[in-house]
Image 1 (cartoon, helix red, strand yellow):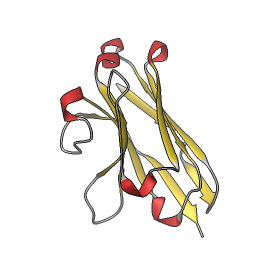
Image 2 (image 1 turned 90 degrees about the vertical axis):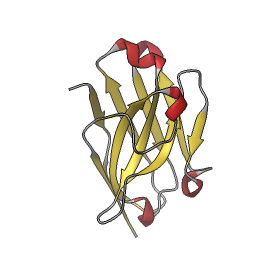
Image 3 (image 1 turned 180 degrees about the horizontal axis):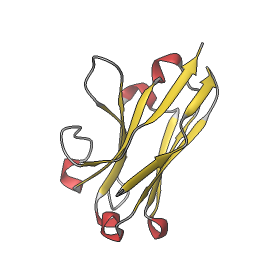
Image 4 (image 1 turned 90 degrees about the horizontal axis):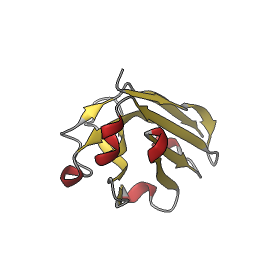
Amino acid sequence: VQLQASGGGLVQAGGSLRLSCSASRSDYSQRAMGWYRQVPEKPRELVAAMSSIGGTKYADSVKGRFTISRETAKNTVYLQMNSLKPEDTGVYYCNVQADYALGDSRVGIWGQGTQVTVSS
């Protein structure tokens, strides 16, 4: 498994979760890493992504609530999710992609999803 995600779960609205994704390949530190969300009958969409040099891109719906970070030495990317809302519910997928494709949900290598459910 090249990307191993963890940290999903069930939380009440207003709560917090932190997702982690560890990459098995060290060269992924030279690529963008990020998180995408999918809900039934909708395409996968960007939540947050970070380039290899620290540039970030966020979905408008999560700005100010979610923070993406990377720990290069551990080839790991995190997504701190605060003030969660029911509409944040979905399967969250970790992704690795070239820096020039930052935030493009059509490309990259995908990890297995982790379910996030926010109850009202």
